[in-house]
Image (cartoon, rainbow, N blue to C red; front, top):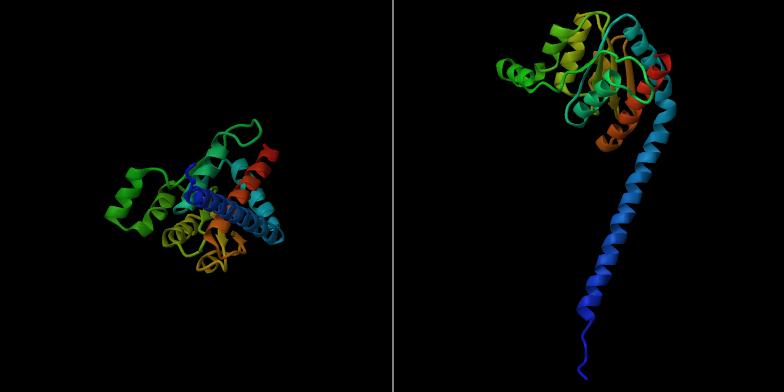
Length: 212
């Protein structure tokens, strides 16, 4: 009876098992890092989240609206916030006025083409913002030039600002005034900051829901 060589098949199977274990270990590591960042953030941000929720409620009670902006994943967060406010979060209530400044490609590209990419949000704030409105500015680094320009435009329109940032706050902190609120996530990882930003936005939506 001929000898069957199973070495290649066995080795492949072993490597597959090791690869799966390696992937699962990394997934566990990423979950744990996210959990730890959320836990580390809680005491640092909960008062600011509560204050920001009060500000949003006041804006809606005064017939104002929320303008939101950010880049990349933060742009998605801005759109997420607007969808939860206009439609609903977890409770039935009336729609609340919100505009994500990241969604209209014709506006974004025309401003970037005629002026500069730095102006894609500020130009919209100048056109759409009023003193009863609030700008929700999202930047993980705190250094996004177009977000900083939007904050400056909001101040010129006497709008208030709620800023979501991370790490050391970057240039954002010095761009805010005393009436603005910065909710800063204590992490250097963009991914971890964005994960906490999403939780913060859900907290804001929940607290707004309680009032409406």
